[in-house]
Image (cartoon, rainbow, N blue to C red; front, top):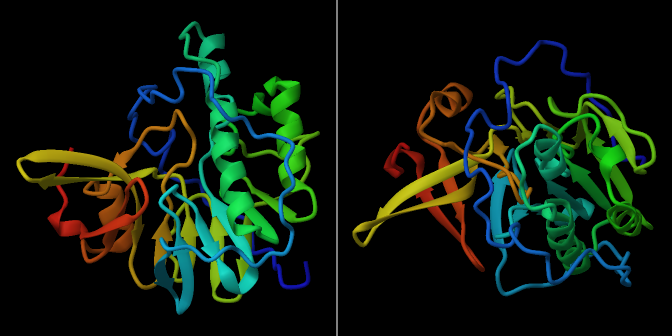
Length: 279
């Protein structure tokens, strides 16, 4: 881990609360409503760190670093063999159930299954989870034995960095990896709460974009980015979203001159933020 440098912890309290401040989708995902057909299995995951070539590679440049934005909502940095995901919100279903709001109990398994596919594809040397990896501080202790084992398998042979978030600000026992407030590599700094600093890759806001196309409105998760900073979409199965026309994004970017890279089934769709619809 000689190339990894831990930046200073985030000391100022964030004015942003909740997950993305957006409320959002609740639990409308069809996948989350039924038992996942493919869990994060004990499979042979390549450790070469090179990543596979793909017909669907969409690059976003942030502070002169070329990143591959995957339609699943992850970032891959080929130069360092680094895969980043944000806002997994594992065990959100069990957190809601404890408060009497019953949700299908398969969100963690579904999220880990999608992450397994990404790791098998890119074979990263480093995985960075950009905060709010668990929906609350008790999430790690509520993991099923099977899901805990899946995380162990995914970590094997690679560096795994848990960035602390507002939902999970303290390190957790028994889930492997290392915990940091921020991670700086070359010109980029990975953190949970966006500050607007140059070279920043952040999460927390759960960006979504809404576009009118052919007489109907389409609302999708997205990467929000300009040349110097990027906010990642939430990766978790039950996560909500905050429209990029919300004031939080205008405050962050200082302008609407940024781009929404909307997630499609197998590609991204780029739209100027000022073209996107509120709501």
